[in-house]
Length: 210
Image (cartoon, rainbow, N blue to C red; front, side):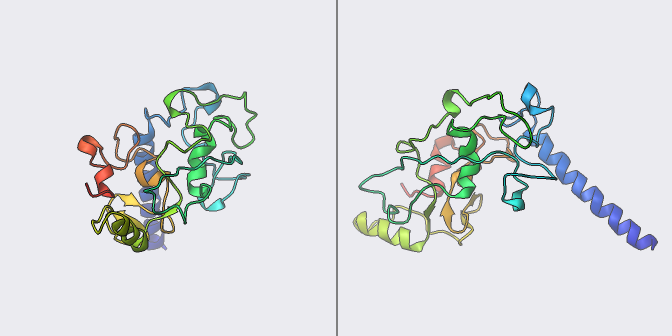
């Protein structure tokens, strides 16, 4: 019995340590809304809640109203993934539900929004034609197609697996999404909420061979 209690206590301490670390990197970041009245003095609540979430999927305990917008997508004669790209997947809609400007920042849970809308450079709008494409298949087929149109010269890094291009650049069910480049929880404390520094275009070169 004592051994079981010890194991349980250690497990709980581990969870608290992870939560503490997550809070520490979010604190003071662009996604820290605790100082704003509508944030209810909580750092997680505008996006997540442990109970009674009304805005599934439940796997993320998602608490924010999801966008229903239709987007103008990126297009280019050199965009070899054009056959697999469609409207943004749910993973990217989590981000767009604030950043497209159609849903209030304070539209979450049982909170009645003012509404408070996103502004400035963080406002992407629903026209994504001038933004990096998202929700497209990033795989060996894409790399081969890009190499063919590039005159036999590889322009893209072959992805390591269906879950990442390279270490630090994740894929989601094999797709490139907003969170492939951006670190929503600011785990790395890099300006722009990036997964890796873009000094010298280092982030771009994780995928693009130039």
